Length: 459
Image (cartoon, rainbow, N blue to C red; front, side, top):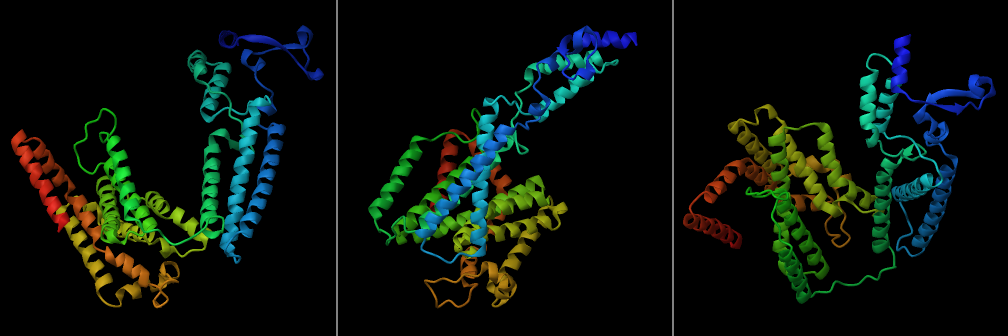
């Protein structure tokens, strides 16, 4: 139709390109009109990212990485302190090698693709823009509008992504993370299960212990900054930045305590572990109370974050799960917070119901830990996972002794964390009221709060 010819002429400039198949040759000495963009586009196979050379390079690099990994395993086996490996250890060793080989092969293929002249395929966003262009070239009443949108989006189109065996360059980060994780697991095994690094008794040195603590404290004081985002004034206590720094200080104390065998601060270490358990109750209750998100994906994400590293270390090192009891404690008490908030969650805004649920959780905890026989009856089916056989204390024949002892030391702390989270809005209002006082009264009130906290802590 004339109107269609006018629209296509107005929206699609034409050039003349040679027709390679003889059967399709037409007038004008074998030339036909095509869109200007098509004249400069790469061949169809290259545009789909199916270039042969980058794929061959990927296979060659992955094969070389597997060969190097095999020799590395043979060398580590020759210096390993253990010669009997479980099926799980052999399985993860193969998985780590495949992850490293896949990453290295795809990395090489991605590196060579643009240098060999293969552009790849457009990204998902650019594919949408291409769809707009095709629609504009097909004509129609909306052709002028589509062409305008296409022209305005032309500058935002990014270069095509290389594709190696279906993996885009945007997905390379996942392979890099898997290879990095595999290298970390190998380094852990190399340090702890081989003779490459000498082992000896711990060096007890209070001077070194307190000297390192003072050095870290000095660095911390020199790098003080305001909590929150840049330009944001934060007055509420226990912001994410503060709790993360709190965790960092405790982690350093754990490392120094074990490295220097500084038994004099054992009580402080116990308080740090209790503080971690308190954060489990405080943080999870705050999330469920405010967000009301009890979906399975979010809960499984939390379980994954708590256990994935420990699980791989246990398999790689052939250790029992309870050797890393803090992960088991966080997992169990997270379950406790979840069920406390989830049961009757439609009534969580009712103060009486919320306090009643916390009281019920306290009663269940008393029954579980303080009534003889109940704990072992409940956890006996999980002895295969939570049991621990300590070679340093063969007198403990009960495999659940370690789990009962470790979790029992702090079995009320997570409930106290929930109570603090429930009372946090009131506490925040009281602190804000202190900030609104005149300067004299404000100083006295802050001194009273700080003095009371120090007095309780000292006691």
